[in-house]
Length: 92
Image (cartoon, rainbow, N blue to C red; front, side):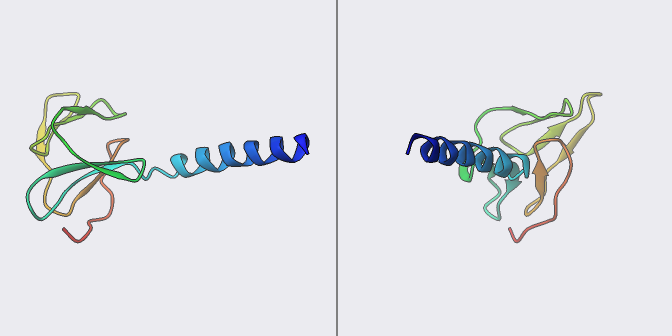
């Protein structure tokens, strides 16, 4: 019985790690003009600056400041992955 339990626990941790590797966490601007951080499947209205893996930073207004200081604006429906790449545009 212990072995079955251990196998189940290991499988759950493996699946949890696999779903996070898929890169579902992202930042998006909705049609209401507000910026949301989708983290672990939960939608969080942004009120802080969020650093990305590529060194860029996104603020609550959707301004993306790159490492070299270039500023771009997140548009409604755009999806910004946490590694700094733009994902497919979603319905805002």
